[in-house]
Image (cartoon, rainbow, N blue to C red; front, side, top):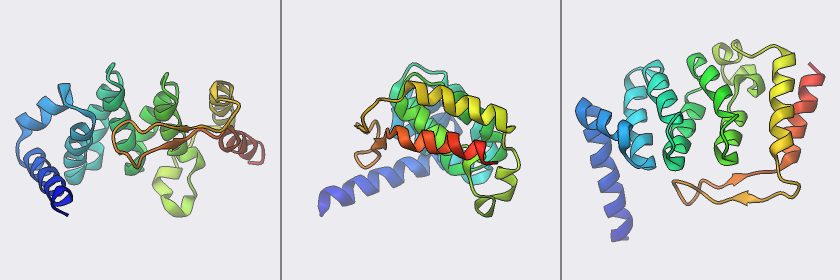
Length: 173
């Protein structure tokens, strides 16, 4: 339909701008909305995945919830070794949508088949256990689906059993 075509066209125009205009990209990273932050970080990562990590880390220090979510979502998709420490810190974010997205993307819990170099930067078992234990303590008793922050399809499932399973996985290593 025409609304979808319009949204796609607008998104592609923004992406083109962020790929070709460093000033526009930097401005969005400083104060743009979540979806634009994701696109700007993606444009950086398109040329060099590592180059998106530091700007994403800076966005994660921002007060803007949607902006932080966009940054952690991009980092979670990169599976780049340089993103691992930033994702570990993001697990401590006050918002569970950000914390869980970061946690689920950690190299500690990725199959080596999915990314050998990424899996190689896993933390020692004791640190993996401590991180999972700390997150589990913050989880709700029931299993809510948390409201999406940036895109309507990006709900986050806050099932404490997922975190508990990861906790148990660390014991089996």
